[in-house]
Every structure is written in C-alpha cells, then in structure tokens.
Amino acid sequence: MPKTKTALPPAQNVAPAAPAPAIKKVNLAGIGARASTKTTTTYPVLPDEHGEVAKLVGDILDESDQLDALETSVTIKKAELKGMASAFYFTHHHGLHEIPSSIEARNGERQVLVSFQNRYKVVPDEAPLIALLGEERTARFFRQGFDLKISGDKIPAAVADTLIEGVVALFAEHGASEALTAISGIKPTKEFHTARHSALTVEENAALELVCPIVGMVKTKGRGEDK
Image (cartoon, rainbow, N blue to C red; front, side, top):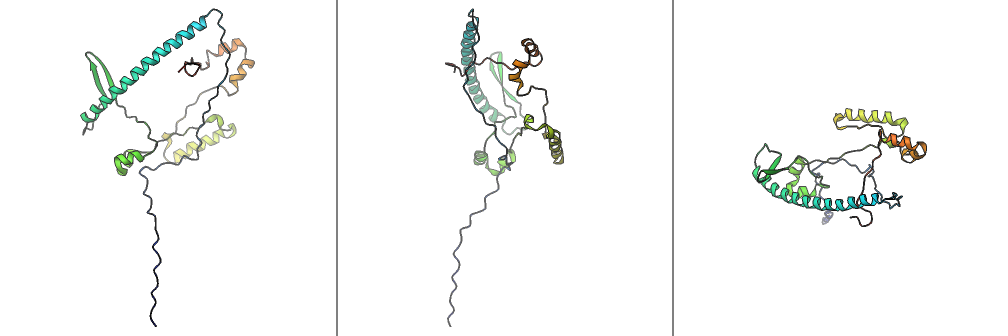
C-alpha cells in the first residue's frame, strides 16, 4: 500500500521580539498630571481722583513696551553669539578631557562670557537620540529623569505622619535617601485669602503684611491691547 505524504503545516509568521529599549524608564502613567485652567474675570477698578493712577499705568505700560523690545533684541543677539561660540566650543575642545566652562567674547577691553553649563533641556523621547547616536551610546550617556511632587495639603492630617514615615523608610530601604528632599514652611490655609477680610480688621491685615505679605504683581500682559 503506497505511503501517503503528510502535508507540512504552513509556516507561521512570527513577529520578531521587540528590542530592549535603550533607556529603561519608570512608568509614571498612574500619577496624575496637574491640569491648568484659565478664566476671565471682571475686577474692581482702583479709584483715581487726581489722575495719579493713570499716570503710573501709562508709564508702566510704555516703559514695559520699551523694555520688552530691548529684551527681545538682547535675546536674539545672545542666541546669535551663543551659536557662534558653540561652533568654536566643540572644535576647540575636541579630544580634551578638561573643559573650561565658558568662552570669552571681546569688544576691545569689554567682554562677555558665553557659558556652557552641565545642564541640558529635557528630551521628551529617546528616538531622535537613538537615530543620531545609536542605542549603545544613548544608553551610555542618557537616562530618564523625573521629579515627583507630593502635595502635603492634600494628605489627610490623620495619616500624614504615617505616610511620610513610610516614604522615608521605603527610600532608605532602597538606598535612595539622598533622592528624597523636603521643604517645609508655614503658610495660610486655603480659606484664609477670602476669610481674612471678614475675620481680621483692616489694621490687622495691614500689620500682617509685615509678617506674611501677600504676593502681588503688576501684570502688563493679557489685558486689553497688551501683548
């Protein structure tokens, strides 16, 4: 009886395993990002019986426009000078291991320093780095950087001590205590900003300004014809 040939199963297309990423990153997807909202509000107008307010407002806006123009011009020229200095910086120091922090640019006896600090803008993704440097050098010279911020105001007071002690212990367990820092200070409650006007006298509010001044600023942007 002739033997029948058993048909081989069709070859299956197996996708190649994805290469390991050049930079190992911590998954921060479970931590909420802070959303920002903007609203337009009508504000009370400062009385101006003698025109003093109008004079100050006019001077502030006119001089702010002049200052903005000067700052823009200086920023453009600084960027141009930095571009010229950076070309020299990389060619002049190529192959060296001890690099000065700055390049001197002169105008006769006058001079400025173009500094190249060991600080870099954050790149959101490593893809362009890998395309330029390759995975090996990207993994060697780059790593993921991140900062975690804990809003102490949003931690229930009853569990705050226990929670902070647990965080400190956890970092110590992994030998990362130096990565944990804290800034502490006394600040008003969320309700104080509004309640102060009914809970304190005018004199008390004025005296409190010497101890815990309210943050105030003169804005020249985003109102009417302001840029």
